[in-house]
Length: 162
Image (cartoon, rainbow, N blue to C red):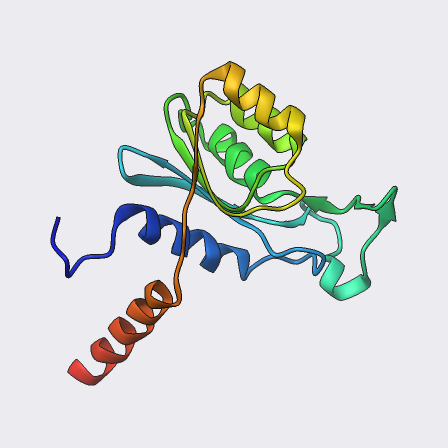
């Protein structure tokens, strides 16, 4: 692989980070990207159900420590695949944070073969157990400041080239 090109894992994870910037629940900014054969098939972020107000506009609707308005990034990405008839069997998912238990169940049921995540976040032991039993690979992707700087430098160089 060329030293001049960003590795695939960092490339897709940075896109998940970018997606997380669209999150509308301020409790946690999460992005998820579904990829099959190194092609992006869907993306999602933490946000409200369609036709519902956004937490950033009206505040969170909390019950038992959870925001009821928010659909998790993984759920948004996978339901986008369902909505548009895009196959998820054998795909991989890139998520900025370790998936919650409910998202882990959805990922398994969708036939995702590998979960890439950047940050640990309330990692559930039962989620680990389910992931192991299902044979899904788990990969924590390390994003460094250098990865972000590579993106910024690229953008700056593109602007000066014009």
